[in-house]
Structure formats: structure tokens, C-alpha cells
Amino acid sequence: MGRRTMSSETTPVKGRSFTLCLLIAVYALNFLDRQILSILKEPIAAELHLNDAQLGWMGGLAFGLLYSVLAIPVAWLADRYSRVWIMTTALAIWSGFTAVCGLAGSFPQLFLARMGVGIGEAGGTPPAYSLISDLYPPKQRARALSLYSLAIPLGSAAGILFGGLMAATVNWRWAFLVIGGLGVLLAPVLRLLVKDPVRGRFDKPQTGQLNLMGVVRLAAGKPTFWLISFGTACASLVGYGFLYWFPTFLARSLHMDIVSRSELFAGAFLISGIAGIFGGGWLGDRLGPGHKFAYPLIPAIAFIISAPLYALCVMAKTPQMAFLFVLIPQALGLTWIGPLLAATQHLAPANSRSQMSALFLLITNLIGLCVGPYFFGKLSDLLKPHYGADSMKWAFVIGLGFYIVAAVLMALASRTIKKDWVD
Image (cartoon, rainbow, N blue to C red; front, side, top):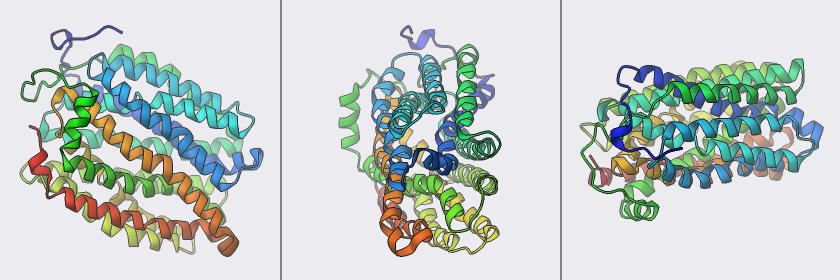
């Protein structure tokens, strides 16, 4: 992997739509590998004899800890070396470990395999954010990053649906083996067809390059960064927890079989995810350039509205009601992605964006991804003696309070973002 200078990098202006589409495909596979576990929890738990807390550790800490921490050194590399090479290597690693998940025979083995998936996926996101920011000018970035983030509902829905169908027709192990093999095959395609654009080509020239401690010191002086990061972390705690445990709620409270709940949740998340992510990006590009306070204020309003609507969803008495009631809050819960990712790209110079993004993701994922699935699983175990099969329902209701905290932090960020903005 040779070091690239700005003069040696190519600028794929004509092929940027194709590049974005391929990046979306890779990111979709990222979430497919990540979320397939949510629908396979029940057959895995039955075979390996796991409780909700252990399932929460496996969906959260096992994946999220190394994923969050390793994103920092990977981002340092991405600000200096080929982003495409880094993403190619990462894709091969996380896909290989996904396949290994299908061979696990115990909780420790599966836990370690999920850690390997997290190691690989640490190299997927920060380089892609930086690369997309060099493909599109500032006034188009929120939409471009939102289009890229459509991979979240596409990949998650595909993983949930495929995992459910595979578990019902063969077994849960083959779901991991097939998806992991697909990613290994896609890795060389990414390397051959995607080129690095010139860094900062749409931004003001920057002198020098910040090292990691320089980026940390820069972030330390920007209240907006911390408000957005911890606000997103609180919202992600709910989002990741809900995404991981909603199929379990459908199984226990609404008594749905694995195929029925995979079809319901995949369809609901696909519709709401696309609407919420694209809508948030459109609003960010529409309102943000002239009113920078809109970038954090859009998700603040969305979180406030989402909380009571999610509570209404988990109180549903039939699968049809649950499907209808989950669409709006799920969409609103994802509107933050485009506006806040675009805003984060403007809290650091162009040549340090990957590291700033990784620092943002470190905070967000250590709280949201690592804690979210475990929090709801542990809370469900604690509530089970009193609420029985409905313990997960009431765990959701209690956890929705984090959306209110997230909304308050975003509202505060809307008052500081103009001062902290970097053009």
C-alpha cells in the first residue's frame, strides 16, 4: 500500500455515480453482515443455550468495541494512504470472519468471531466518508452521504430477510457462510474499479496535516463536536438496541415465526429507512447551507417526535399494527444521518476528515453500538420475572428516554455550530 500524494491521485468526476453505487453495495454488505445476527438470535440461543444478556454482549460489545477503537488508527491511515486499499482489506477481513461465525460451536467462539467482524468493519466507514466528501461539493454532501447511508436499510433488510429464510430452510450457520463468502468475492472488485479522488478538491487549500492528537485538540475546542457526538450516541443506543431486539419482541409478544418476523421487519425497515435517511439528507442540503443551525436541529425535532411513536409501536396487539406503527418513528430516527455526517465533515480541515469522523464514530459506537444491544437485553432479563414474555416490550419503553436526551443535546449544538464550522 503505497503512500499517495494529491498529485498522484485521480479524480473520477465522470464515474462518481458508479463509485458511489459500489460504495453503497460494500456498505450494504457491512450492515448485512452486522444485522443478520438480529434475526438469527433465537435459533442461535436455542442451540448454544444463551440468555438475553449474553445475546446483548454478542450483538454489542463483541462487535462494537474493536470496531469503534480501531476506527481511529484506520482513519489516521486513510488521511495519508489509499482509502480504497484500506476499504478493500477491511471488506475481506470482516467477510472472512462473518463466515467463521457459521462454524462457531459455543458462545466464546461466536463472541470472538464477532470481534473479528468488528475489526474488519472498522476500516469501512471513515475512509468512505472522506472519499465521498472529495467526490461531491459541500452543497451536495448531505444528499451524497445520505445516499451512501441508504445502504443501512438496504443491507439490514437484506440481512434480516435472508437470515430468516436461510434459518427456516437450512440452518443459521449457512446464512453466515454464504454472506461471508459473497464479501470475500466482492473485495477485489472494489479494488479494481474504484479510484481515490484528490483530497480536498472542493475545499479551501489546507497547509500541513493534523496528527491524531492534533485532531483531538481541535475537537476539544469545539462544543458542537461533543454535543453532536454524545447526542448521536444516545440516539444510536436506542436505534441499535431496537434494530437488534425488535425481532425478539415480534417473536415473544406477538408470537410470530422466524420467516414472518423477518419479512415484517425487513419490509418495515427498508421502507422507513430509505424515507428517513433520504429525507434527512434532502432537508440538510435544503436548509443547512444557509442556516447551519438546521443540521443538528433537524434530528432534534425528529427524536422528540419518535419517542412516543415508538412506544405506541411496541404496545401494538397485532403484527399488522406493529408494522404500521413502526414506519414513522423508524424513519424519523434515521433522519440524523445525512445532516450530522455532513456537519461533522465541516468540523475539521479536509485533510483530517477521516480522523474527525473516526473520533465521532468512536464516541457514538462505544455508547450506541456497544451498550445499546446489551442494555436492552440486560433490562429484559431484569424485567422478565415481572413481565414474562413482554419484558422486551417494557425494556423498549424505558430505553426511549435516551431519545429525549439526544434531542436536548442536538438543540444545544444548533446554537454553537456556526462558530465551530470549517469551510
